[in-house]
Image (cartoon, rainbow, N blue to C red; front, top):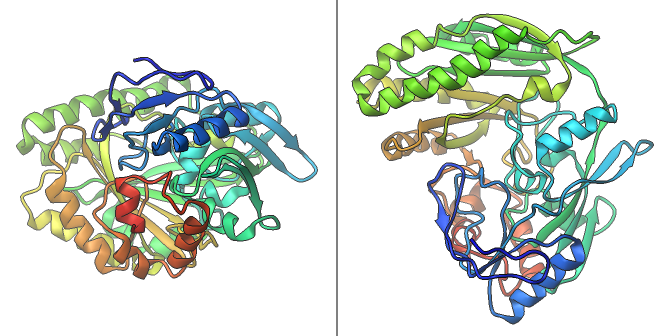
Length: 443
């Protein structure tokens, strides 16, 4: 593939594909700007050439949010920390910085994000633009930890926004779907690094759903996985600790995180794809394979884990009070169907936030994520699940598979019109548009 670096850009000769392999695009050219000035120049050049512009991160989105036949902006050279302000408790990073590099760099400085998702391969701009989140009783998504943004807009100018500067743009751009411009830098709120103690243990589906409110209230970060075709769950409780670090032993960590969660899981899913009838029996075994364990470490080593088995995913946010009923309906649907589901269902939570298109905007939220192994037909499962989620006022994760459109979102998000008004002002000609944005935001 011929790619450009800086403003000297070549033609693209190969298709771009996302991580899961379910989305591809053939851009007219790819560019790899090394500075905000070069990025702005590429935006202006694309506009002159009549081409759309889309930034792409590591392709971890399952939607076509980054797909374009115009100019694909690669962020590999826009990486690193620009500034640490210890007094303000902030760090400013280039948009293409992978979360794993940010987490490691912050740890070396004795700092940490307050909360994060369970994988850290994404770029900071890609993760925040689609609303990536972890689980938290009091602490919200990565986007909610943003205190300022630097954005290259459709006319090639550089706009900064925060609660005080261009606040109406800030309210929208923290989860901007790539629709408002190309993010060049993000300022996050950070805090002194701390310890988390993780407690993982099996629990029955009936007990988790019966005690969910208490488990949520008693823990800073609670999540669980339900294994379809079984009544079994794995739970994880992360709470702040005085330390010291007591990570899992190397052998047990290798067995749990690599052999069981990745290696054996890969084999099991491959078998299930080839012979779907084996899945319920395998599920009963695999749901009991992970044993109880407790360990303590710095946040990113507790929150995140490797994900080497590729899959496709749908995730919906429902009002937290609707979680148990929604999940029980999902379980009943699976049991009454002929579906064979080899991936566990993941459940997390988030407090309400004030971002216009956040899945937790204005309401306490619970997330239910359904997955299927890559290459396995997923449409029947996801369609049935989506029917249940939307009946409970669900909001789909912007970076995960869904079939909703702008009419739906106009009802689901009280501040939807606020977002589209900012978009109309910043990008009236839809330089940053594509088919996905046309569907979810309207023309």
